Image (cartoon, rainbow, N blue to C red):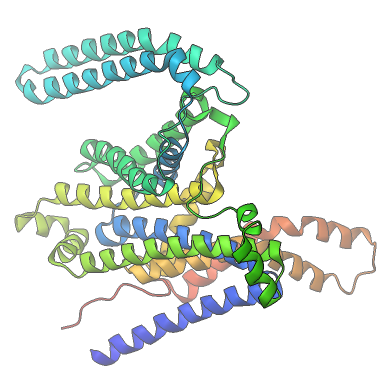
Length: 444
């Protein structure tokens, strides 16, 4: 057994060293700015993959709405860090608050009636319908005119309420809490039913979330985007005007502008790496704890676990909420890095399909595998265009310069990204069907 664990550890170290070598290759032969940009996005993608691995690798829960939970984290980054728009609040802030209070009270009443009057049967159903419709209509009485006034206030530059004006790092925690709250709502309804209900529910809820973000301008500015989200790290222009930074770059003999950009990216790398390592430590502790062993037992045989007195539904809800919270944290980190909240960028290919590919390629059920998959898949996703251009250049060398066929292949080279990603996925699945770092199975 010791030999098996040692060999597995050596394989893990070797694979991560290869990934590091690939990043260094980009730094030496392309640019260090590009390498650090890829590294930071790899770290965020690895955190998302870690959250999905908790749900699928630990408990076998299929979450098809990763996009929605990432968007909720991004919303938290915007709402927490942006300063409130005083004029918009004066125009309709009170009306929005009253409308939201009515909706919350309506939801509480619906929940209480549904849970406490189960013996009423059909009567309970009609009570719930009447209260829900009345509460919605009453809330719109406050919301609609207030929203119109907010969106009419300087629509070109604001047209929304803004945020709380708090440090942006605080939004990473809020993003996790917001995603966890929505996951709790979804899980209470669907967990315990057939597994495909969870996939349908998460997919539907994520599309609803993105639809709301794109159309509720008073909350997110819709497709007009919210820019200028404060940074947790220095700005390049501020560094360039700082005497100590000028003296340091001059002493070492580096370019001031390029070095300031690299320094900022390194600051982000430090923050993201700290979060990733902290989450990895917690996930490893959970995996090796009695709770983690119980989760895997439930995943392998729900009937047997239930017969032994384990609450399968409650356990599934716990891990679904935790995994979604991690995805929400990563979503807030991504918006912090981009400096803007744009609901239009959230689409299933980037925020659901690719994250699942990361977990599959790395090895579901293994936290280190999920992290490695996040690095590999995102690296190839970015570098696929460069690889495609290189392949087209090599293949078209025998052709004459300026020929129609050569120009056609060169112009279509960027479109090879999806083909290259598909080939990468097929190769990994063919030669490593359980992932590069598969789940360790205990041996007797």
